[in-house]
Amino acid sequence: MSGTRGALSRRAVVIGLGAGLAGIGRAQAEPQELQIDQLKPGQFSWHPERAPGGPIAIVVSLPDQRVYVYRNGVRIAVSTCSTGKKGHETPTGVFTILEKDKDHHSSIYNNAPMPNMNRLTWSGVALHAGNLPGYPASHGCVRLPMAFSQKLFGITRIGTPVIIADAATYPTAVIHPGMVLSADAAKAFDGVAAAAKKQAAKPVPANQIPATSIMVSSADQRIIILDDGKQVAEGAVTITNPDKPLGNHVFILSSVDTDDKELRWQTIGYYDNDQRSPEPMELVTIQRIRTTQAVVDAMTARMHPGTVMVTVDVPLSADTRTGKDFVIITNDAGS
Image 1: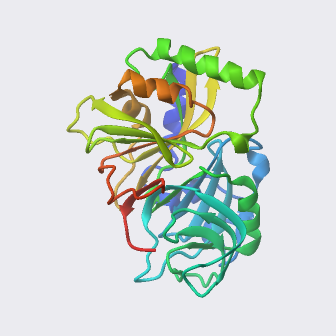
Image 2: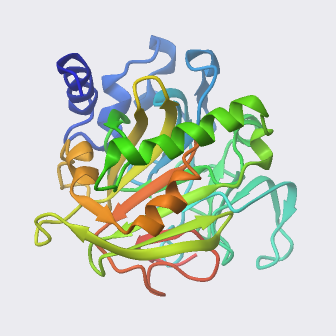
């Protein structure tokens, strides 16, 4: 990474350091009439023109009762929300959208309407339109203003990452030379470049490209790869300084630069304790990880914009991931 790129990345991290998600809102100021802290229940801001293209990431702040939407690392929207009430708290962690249904009705709660539903778990957690009283009031879902839910539904897709947390960093630009997790990053990138050129020669609609998710756990030193929620590869990982935590990081592949042989990522760190200060260690984190050639080959064929990679320090077990859900739960409070 060049000195200029490194400086830009560090600056992007500093914006959100130690501030939680409320601090993020204040650091990147909205026009006066759209101050994030002053949004009333049901209000939101929506500025898709700030980033017309690129992968979407959604962050739900439980303390702030806010939903932040990023496209290609740029915040394009903020909305008020209502998450789970006491006894039905919304679980924290990393999810991806599993299903979309514009006119959904609950199969659990008396056929209750859930318009513009983006499903996060098969057990009942979703983003959808609903009543916003100004405090947590749902049975575990994230309720949104109707107009906002309609707009959000229009830009999400199966596989869009959703981070639900007490604190998170502002998205950071990370540029990795060559192929990640490979001992020979430059050589492995040749396969990524070949796949990118093949895609460019015969484009496939975005909704027909599998949603690829990669999960790396330091706890059991394991990696798994999923396409549309189905496991397609797994293997062991080796981690430099294994006694040092990797941390909770979500990497979203922004673009593949075949000329400079670089992968460009947007990354978000997240925590279920708002007293913990996020650390700007994203590039260092992925540089510490290596995996087998078979897993690298499986990843190489799937390095397309929107690919999600998550690092965690919990085991990839039934306690944190169940069924075909892509869920890394750090606090399973119930749905």
